[in-house]
Each structure stands twice: as structure tokens, then as C-alpha cells.
Amino acid sequence: MDVNANKLTAACEAILFAYGEPIELSRLSEALGIEDELTEQLLLNLEANLQERGSGLRLLKLEDKYQLSTDTQYADLIRSVLEIKRNTPLSQAAFEVLAIVAYNQPITKSYIEQVRGVDCSGVISSLCQKKLIEEKGRLDLPGRPLVYGTTPEFLRCFSLSSLDELPSLPENDANKNIENEAEQAQIINENKEEPNEE
Image 1 (cartoon, rainbow, N blue to C red):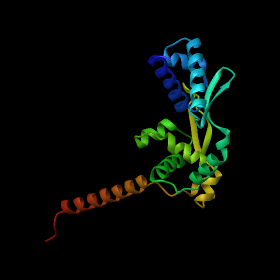
Image 2: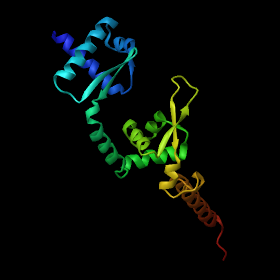
Image 3: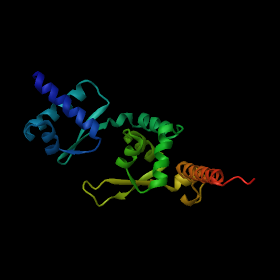
Image 4: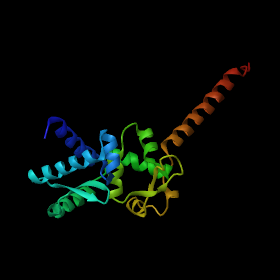
């Protein structure tokens, strides 16, 4: 196999890994800028490479789609690690995403990322695994983006009987403080403008 074929095979592996779901052969070919026949050959090479090096990954062919998957012999180990991950405490980022979802649901991933200013894919995935948020459908917009919302498990974990019991947002409290300060300043100014009685 020449250097170019090695690079294309590695590119196939990277795309399949990052995509995480079954991907059509035609989309893979389009991304690589090559014909379907060559892509199929690269996938065969990738499958052989994985087996040759005793990788924990396997290449699955699902009709006209392909996906990277873990070897079934490691299922118990993977399950145990995912269980450990599921039971780990929430990070600051997870709390932030959870708050954004709770107060704005149903909400898209892009909106969450716009508010936080960073990619939130991993955090959203983790919160879904912990069953604190879930997919609530798709918006009727181009691309049909998924929307997320909280779950009954979220209410149980935070001892809430409904979302109506969520505390008011800090911004609202801050706005009230600003309004109170403005009112006090206005009263002081009005008192200054009144003539002193002799």
C-alpha cells in the first residue's frame, strides 16, 4: 500500500471514529474526494489493519453504511467503565449545561454552545447517559436540530416535584437589585433638589 493509500485509510478511520454513527459509503467517499470503489477498498484495508494489530475496535458493515465498534470481548469492561462514569459527580461544566437546559427547554445544542461559548457535545452526552437530560424531538428548521430537555430523573435528583420549583435566575435577582438601587438614587436626587427650609 502506498503512502497516499495509508493516509486515506487513516482518514477513513478518523472520520468513522469522530462520526460515531453508521455513515453511508457515498458520504465517506464525498468527504475523502474519491470514488466509492476506492473507498470500499480503503475500508477493507482498515478492517484488515484493525484485525492485524489486535485492535479493540472492529469495522461493521450495516447494509450500505459503515461504523467503528468495540470488540464484543471487551463488552463487560466497557460496561463497567461506563457505569463508573455514570456515577461520577457532575463537573462545573455539566452543572452549567444542566442549568441552561432546565431554564430554557426545549433547547438545541447550538444554543447551549452559544451561551457557554464552547463545544458541549461531551457534556450533553454525559448528561444524557446519566439520564438527567434527554432528546425531546427535532425543530422544524433546516437540518432538523435535536432539542433537549430535563427528565423525571433530574427532578428526583434535585428534589423537585416540578420545574416550577426551580429557583429564580440570578440575572433576575440582579435586575431587581439594579432597579432598587435606581429607585434609591432617584429618591436621593429628588431630596437634593428640594429647597432647604429655613
